[in-house]
Image 1 (cartoon, helix red, strand yellow):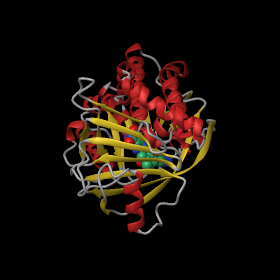
Image 2 (spheres, helix red, strand yellow):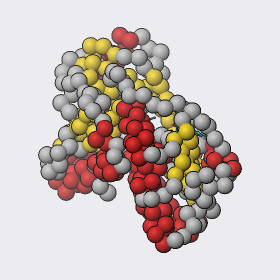
Image 3 (cartoon, rainbow, N blue to C red):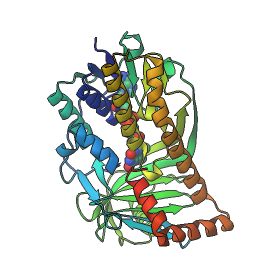
Image 4 (cartoon, helix red, strand yellow):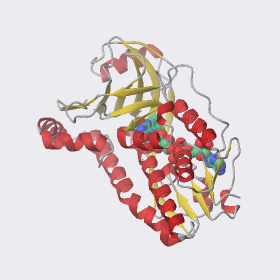
Length: 369
Ligand SMILES: Cc1cc2nc3c(=O)[nH]c(=O)nc-3n(C[C@H](O)[C@H](O)[C@H](O)COP(=O)(O)OP(=O)(O)OC[C@H]3O[C@@H](n4cnc5c(N)ncnc54)[C@H](O)[C@@H]3O)c2cc1C
């Protein structure tokens, strides 16, 4: 049995295991699903990977394996208040960066992580759901997602609630090019984002809404999408299959107990409106691998609660603030009150025209703060 056993080879569990192995730890991973395979065509299941996460994935030997059209850099973010007149746009050029981030196909990223694990000789047991709590390893790492069985089994308490929103995702082809821009409109019924894919006229639509957008006929959905995106990219020419996900917010009170650490969505799940969930998880993975690497050098037991608390302290605040920020955006942009609508539009315009605030916004989007 390895010193560290990980439940879940999602983005966070597997990137943690790669980073920990790189720090000289003996790690073993168990994953309920089968080994991922690289995609053959564009899909809507993508995530926005910020610059800080890219750097971490580079260090793990993963990012360089991603190829076009499954990894697309974006240079601009444009956000519109769909209920008012406010908008904000920032570009990598303004910040002196080559890009703000990358839109990455989730299956391509999973496959790249799996290949990196093979090359490093990291054992991953695909298609094997386990109860890692009974393994007797020095440290058990739960990276088994928002419905973490490990967390529940260990009785680690959390607060949680479901949003009225559900996210509907699909690939859409528009008349005009996406211009390497991540677009977002906030409407009372919820935000809609268009993320640039590897073909200039194709985007991934991520539409969080109180409305049921999956059962609507294709033509109605296409015309609703064109109107909701103010025809900035023209009309919608075609769409792919639509999928929907329920959305929730949750955060555990404690990330660690003796011999156990929670990572990623197992510890915190947020609304996807700013595309930060996996990015926060990568930062958890990097932090825990760093703490454990140092512990090995200090000759300490990996499951030592005092040691694990260092990891919790380094991550809890940022994750909590991100959850609060998503909640504030959700409420601010979902409000029907005219006074709040005015503040919202003026606020966006104020940030747009204020260079210092814009730099700060760019830095947050890139994962720098
Ligand atoms: C619509 C939508 C859009 C999003 N967009 C973005 C974005 O643009 N950018 C971003 O950063 N984030 C985004 N997110 C959030 C992001 O998808 C999650 O934060 C991220 O997937 C969490 O990764 P994870 O590895 O912690 O969990 P998961 O991806 O859920 O992985 C957990 C893994 O554990 C495995 N598992 C579960 N139980 C067991 C068991 N008992 N034994 C073994 N294995 C087990 C599962 O099979 C799974 O592979 C989005 C989320 C949604 C819903």
